[in-house]
Length: 88
Image 1 (cartoon, rainbow, N blue to C red):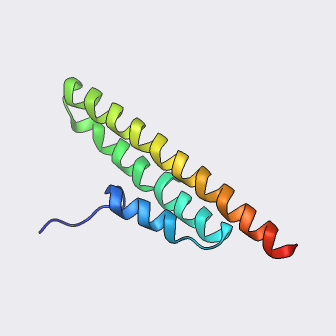
Image 2: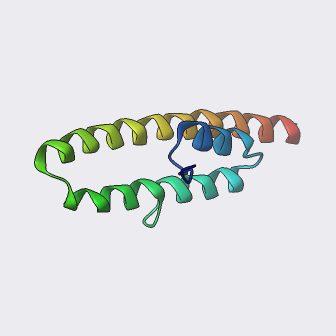
Image 3: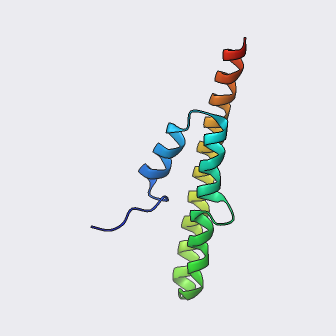
């Protein structure tokens, strides 16, 4: 039974989806994409890989980073709209 990573798609997707405020969403962004975030940590481990593996892993991480960014943006829009509507 391997340890699950914050980068497993069901983990980061549910973490973003369950954020109910913009502050909670920002917290998830930092956990995933921040200086000490999961993506950054994964990128740091690439130095030990051979060039071929590094290239593949780099492409995979960049794609993942884009998917996470898109999901965060979508959720941010959703929460902003909800907060705006709550004020009206």
